[in-house]
Image (cartoon, rainbow, N blue to C red; front, side):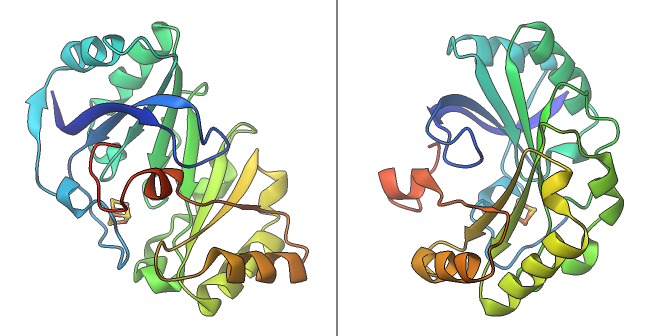
Amino acid sequence: MLTVNEIFYSIQGESTRAGLPCVFVRLTACDLRCSWCDTPYAFHEGHKQSVDEVVAAVQQHDCPLVEITGGEPLLQEDVYPLMDRLLADGRTVMLETGGHRPIGRVPARVVKIVDVKCPGSGEADRNDWANLDRLAPHDEVKFVVNDRTDYEFARDVIRTRDIASRCAAVLLSPVHGVLDGKVLSEWMLADRLPARLQLQLHKFIWTPTTRGV
Ligand code: SF4
């Protein structure tokens, strides 16, 4: 069984697939507490559903793209058969993970969006750095940037660990309402950083606190 917070159909707001219709499966629970977390309702709220029931709910939306997110989806053992079933169903499967849980068991065809937590999150000491060696060429690495200190941390990690050569995209996302995207853009340009600015599209389309989008 899985504990599911919500399943909904919306526009993908993040990653290189931003703008595409996508079904989201948000699983309950997280063992981090990022200072800027925008889904704290997923820490505890949820209901039990079998893998079959989740697959059926996804199929109702007739959409080729599905993202499993949270909370931290890798905390639930049944996320693995869920990913297998969605892949077997012919879907492109994305997995958003906080970067502190090992990603080695995730099926190879799943597109992993792996966070590297910056100091401003309060959780930077939880990064599982070995995950960078587990990335597939189609995966993406995301840094959520709160301030200049976070930016310099991300920049140095990107450079010293050559993140851009390990995956399909390096994403820098300003904390919405805290760091101006223009400011972050100027920092990235000044440093010639091999990364992509990511704005959370859904927070511009809908109000930032809207759930289920
Ligand atoms: S890992 Fe994700 S869900 Fe967990 S606290 Fe951080 S932002 Fe929130």
